[in-house]
Amino acid sequence: MTEKTPSCFVWQTQEDGLVPVENSYLFATALREKHVPFAHYVFPSGFHGLSIANEEFFNGFSGGEYTMEQTMRAVYSVKDGKGVRVSEQRKKELEEQFFSGNDQAGSGIDMSLKEDVGLWCDLAMAWWKRLCAPPMI
Picture (cartoon, one colour):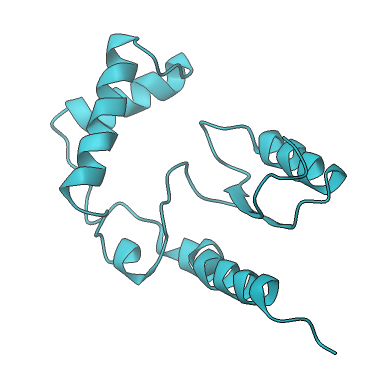
């Protein structure tokens, strides 16, 4: 990372089972040390891969076939032990979710996340507008 690193909006959840939350703190610290503009939010709950977490997401739309294709490639890589490394517990969870034949009821989305994680898009847009606003004289 250098002073030329682009401005960053960083968000994560404490419960992320794939990427330790400490990683986002370390990244934010490095951005600060290099004087790179950034915003950093850590939400209390939510799984890895919440995507854009907007209204469409909470209505069960996950981005279409392309996103699902990417998801399935990653899940098959985990299942086959190729490229994507996760804990044995997470591997079992993914196998149960994607290969057991037991579909999740409804969208499987915790609607309570809408109250905090669901706001990250609005927070990012507000931050971006402020970052791009002309200087006040």
